Image (spheres, rainbow, N blue to C red):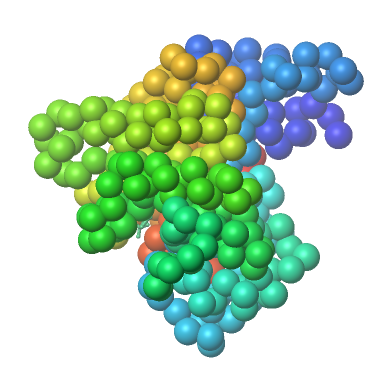
Length: 297
Ligand code: PEP
């Protein structure tokens, strides 16, 4: 395959602005070209594959889940660059795992307990999720934080437990409308990240995904503008870069909050946005696939 036809290179060309780790897109392309020479500087590759993960929340039935997964599978070939993942309600995970077997779509859970096993009625342990084929587990979703009162520390313990079991945590962070209006977005997001870094160390984020989800944009139809989202993503990557540049360059930072087929491409074109965590639009196969295609190179 010629260099320019490489989907990742084209994607990098399409990215807007220098990425926060300080490398211009040209430099990234240069580095990725170098990395194509066997054995040369391969550690310097900074390409991040987009990830589009659907959070189905507490929706579905055996019949609707079947229809949704069949629809995703039918259009999967049109999504050429992004990894797709779906996070069904726990009870439907085995059904979805069986249907997705042999496809490239990854499976995730919407939450996870912070313990390995024991007397925790109603909870699901991280090892149970790997057992049924999950790759990802969302932790710290704003609905867990606000409706179920889950703290930064509890979220950090879930993050740690997920990693320990071999899951890739998708750590959700984001501010309330009132916090944005008070000008403390970075303080809030920084505090949410700090809880995980304090418990697990910065190195743990090398095997994780962050989802920036402004709470005021979740399920409201209000999307952060691409620049508003990019500003927070750049803050997150910059904060991580201050501790470990390699982790900051590697980690996928997703945007979540009323992403649709019509606004995904512009959001994903921003330098530090590496895909999306999708709620409502992930319940419709065509909408979800359209968002996946927005990541196409
Ligand atoms: C979410 O709940 O993670 C989310 C982003 O929801 P929505 O896309 O519906 O705003």
